[in-house]
Image (cartoon, rainbow, N blue to C red; front, side):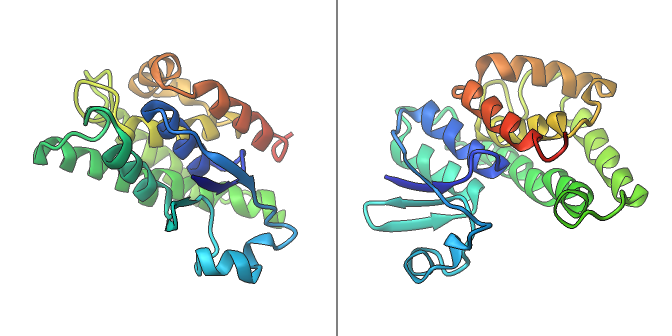
Length: 208
């Protein structure tokens, strides 16, 4: 199973952790975006949107990390615990995944990417969106050990990939007590956490 990725990428790290959780071995292929490797014809055939992460499983190509997480669990999970078949449990996980994509991680991209990649000044309004996203997550986690239900799911894996990226960017997670408590537990119980953190440290060089 070929996996096109960069170790510093939060979405890529979420796939690595999920693969670890279901016991799937990834044939990791580094893609150098700065060299334009994602725009080469051979990669465009695999993924015309030329994004990472991209998974190729026996000729089947898939991108968008959260879609990949669900696919891995549905196809290779020995149980459905990471993405239960119960419609209500699954709906809650989906909500958290969409929140991660459209609100939490989006706030990271909107605030930090212009500073890191375009040397733009910090935008205070964009920073407020980060704080609002963490306020929401803090509310979701009130009285909860996990992000969606009573056990570890792909929602936790996606969110821990994002939250750990905020940590290495210097965002103070400790101000959000529920998030902080959840995060400390997630570090201990999420398969592949060590590789996730190694990728975070690689991404951290952009902030040093």
